[in-house]
Image 1 (cartoon, helix red, strand yellow):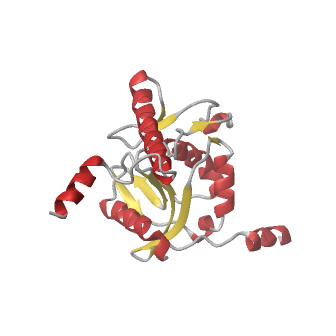
Image 2 (cartoon, one colour):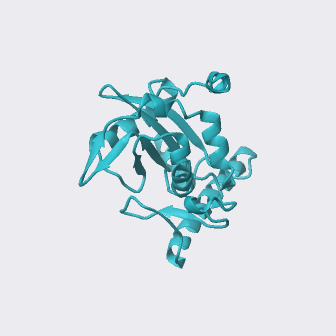
Image 3 (spheres, helix red, strand yellow):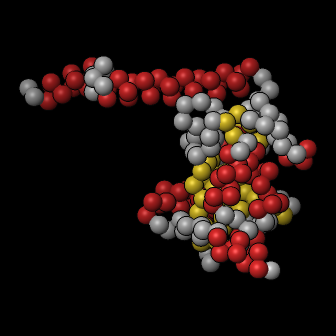
Length: 218
């Protein structure tokens, strides 16, 4: 009992989505709950402790990190037949989640790194644990080691969210890989241009912008 109490005391509180730094995330999650519909960038999970959801969250994180604009995972929405029940996450389940634990354990399977923001959002008097998975910085996310058999995590696998569907799958064809590599190439090109501007090797504005600027002076 003492060990459990010490563990709880060492767990940092999960921030509220009402904080100014999470305003965009708050709006995105609220809209998803208003619509109450899963999508490529929105994944609902029923209230459950971290140990029950950690493999599904890790796998979904790997996939959403490969999406343009990333995605959100909302814990506290249950599927009931053909509809969703917006019940929120129970206090007992919520107490098992710790920001550092989620980030560390998830990233132990992600290469190069998953950028996560974790908040608690209150919606119509109920609380929801939300993970925002930001899109990869330059290199697509790859699973870097095998997980337990029940996890579905395979070393070297690249996961994605199927366009038009709320499902996490492995990349299985050249077209899917081409789309992902095209996004990576676009991001790297943008990064090179930014560095070039910073060191003076590229113009700060485009030729068309410079022309418009000259016209304004006439």
